Image 1 (spheres, each protein chain N blue to C red):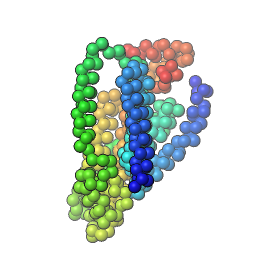
Image 2 (cartoon, rainbow over the protein chains, first blue to last red):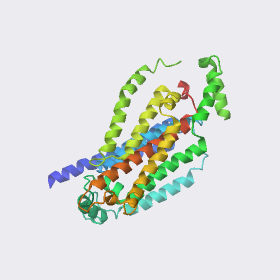
Image 3 (tube, chains in turn brown, purple):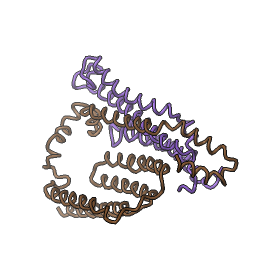
Image 4 (cartoon, chains in turn blue, red):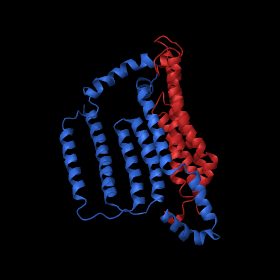
Length: 214
Length: 150
């Protein structure tokens, strides 16, 4: 019993540490005005939360968070950042009061609701007793696939995953419809810079001006 | 060209690229046994190409993996996934009923394995194609990221 208790205390300390880092990063993101720093910090936020998902044994979610949150969306945000200015506009003096009240109210409600949550890993909690337990019991006889996450995603919930794939496809399609596929604007910007005789000296100011206009 | 002072970055990335793509395929085909699957593998492959675009420039990446290819890949992925469903229907089962793919009795799992492998391939194509299409749409706006932009 003492061994279990010590293990729990260790994991609790790791949890507290990781959540504190998340809290600090979130505050820093809210206070910064430099977009590059904000993009980098949001990547760090994703990476730390992926670590935290590993601690609570959600390895698949952690993998996805590290790949999508820390890798992909950071790159896409960097690409979007290049199209706009480098710093966010400063807020007006009292413009933050409304959002602050909403955040505090939501936080109070969440803390109030968290009192009723079952303990982490509690075998008697509804999550582990209901459909989750059924999947664990029937998965091997039904599909013969050792990883329950894969068989639930691919087989039991195959329709959901088809929908998710379609959503990802539609996201790509929507961005391409809004911004173009990238070939023509790339050829345009290469032509623009290629026309300038001295790239290193003149292109900076010249291309910068044209990008601001576009 | 200002390609001199990034030489360490270029060499290290060049060494990492095959490993990244290899890891993506490991994630893809090991998804039955451990964490991972088509979504993660698709993102990792896309990130490999994006890394190439960051070190060699977007035009070089567009020559290696053309935008026409990525957007077709995204569409083909969704079609592969949906096609498995129609394959099961042609065999007399319900939509996406893998058990019906080879008309197996409930105890056998060949159809489940093949079905999940093919739909995960569809997810891989769809996700990597869509992510690269999004990246090209953003990155195509700026030919080369100048140092002052950092």
